[in-house]
Amino acid sequence: MEVKRAYRFRFYPTPEQEAILARTFGCARFAYNHMLRLRTDAWYQRQERVGYHETSAALTALKKTPEHAWLNEVSSVPVQQALRHLQTAFANFFAKRAKYPNFRRKDGVQSAEYTTSAFKWDGSSLTLAKMKESLAIRWSRAIPKGAKVTTCTVSKDTAGRYHVSMLCDDSVSAKKKAKGEVGIDLGLTHFAILSTGEKIAAPNMFRKNEKKLAKLSRRLAKKQKGSANRLKAKLKVARMHAKVADARRDFLHKLSTRLINENQVIAIESLAVSNMQKNRSLAKSISDASWSEFVRQLTYKAQWYGRTLVGIDRWYPSSKRCSDCGHTVAKMPLFVRTWTCPECGSIHDRDVNAARNVLAAGLAVSAHGESVNPMSL
Image (cartoon, rainbow, N blue to C red; front, side, top):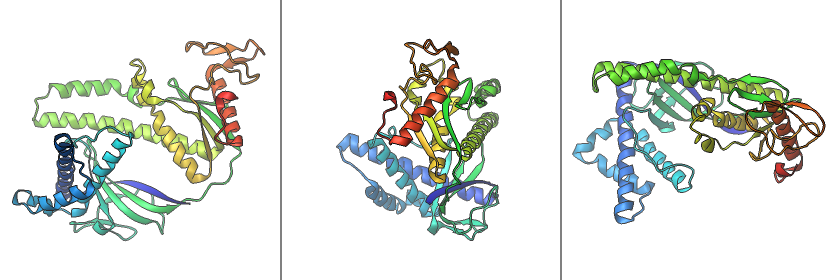
C-alpha cells in the first residue's frame, strides 16, 4: 500500500544555519501575513476574491520593490509555500472545516517548507537551500531505503527546539491477521476501558505538572515586559508545556500501536469532543486526555496495517444496556459505577459493560456493512 509518511527528527543547527533559518521563518511569516491582509481587505472593502495566483503575482511584484528586497535573501521555495498554506487555510475555512485564518505570530511556532528543488537528500544527510553544511540531525530511526522524500518541513517550537519533518512516498504492508477483537470505552479516570476487562489508567500529563506550570506562569507574569529575565521565564514555561505534550504523544502512540498489533477488529464510540469541552468542570481533563488524537492515530494505523476500525454512534446506549441479555434500563446517572440488570440479574461494571456493548455493535456493523445503524441492534 502506497502512503504518505512523515519522519520527524530533532536537529541542532550551527550559528550560521540558525541565522539563515531565522531569516527564512521571518520571510515566510511575512508573506503569509501580508497576503492574508491583502485577501481580507480585498473582500471586505471591494467584495473582490483574491486567490493563490493573484497572491503569487503580488509577491513577485513585492520582491522587486527596494523596501522588500530582503525577501530575496532566502530561498524562494519556503516563501512560495507559505502562500500555498494560506490557500489551504482558506479552502478549509470555506469548506467549514476550520475557522478563518489567523495571522502568524513572531513568538509562536515557526516553520518553513522545502520542496525537492530546495534541498538535497542522499539517503544519509540533508542539506537545505542557501546552506553549505548538512543539518546535524539526531536519527532516532532510519528512513526506509527506496522511500522518496518529497518535502522537508523545518520548524522551531516555542521551547527553542528545532525539528525537521521529512515527508516520504512510502509503501506499507498489512500485518498478519490478528485473532483479537476489542471494544473501547473512553473515560477520564481511566483513559480506556477494554471489552476484555482491562482498564488503562489515564496518564494525566497536564494534571501531574499543573502546579509546576502554575508556579512558572506566576513567575513569568511578574517579569518586566521586554526584559531578558522575562524571555528566560517564558522559555521555561514553554519547555514544561513541550514536556507534557511529548509525554502525552508517546503514551498515545504506544497504546494505539499495541491495540493495532493485538486486534483485527477495533470498535470505539464516536465522541463529540468539542461539545463535551463546553462543560467547564471537565474541559481541562478532556483536553488532557486527547481522545481525538488517539482516534486519529487508530484510524490511520488501522488503514495502513489492514485492521478494521468501527465507529459507533455516540447515542448508542452502551452504558445502559446489559451486555448479557440486551435489556436497556431507562436511566443511568454518571455516579452509578456498578449496576445489576433487572432482567437477568447480571452484575456489571459500568465501563466494562459499555466496552462490551461497543464491541458487539462494532462486530455487527463490520459484518453487515456501514449502513447498519447500531441504534437498532
